[in-house]
Amino acid sequence: MLQKIGAVGIVGLLFVIGGLVLVALIEPVIAGGMALVIAGIGLLAYGLISSFMQSMGLMGPPGV
Image (cartoon, rainbow, N blue to C red; front, side):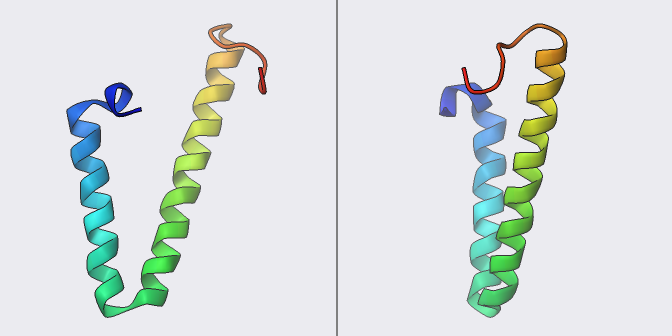
């Protein structure tokens, strides 16, 4: 997986994790909410990109 996102993606992932840890030190409940929002945005982006690629014929049907 790390080869697919590249060096910039790894740095971005470290920033996200570091930011959540920093917030969790002060307010754990807020950090939990932020983690859910970030995960939701990631799943939304994955779904949009997958459906776009499938509509262009670049990907098989879902679940295959």
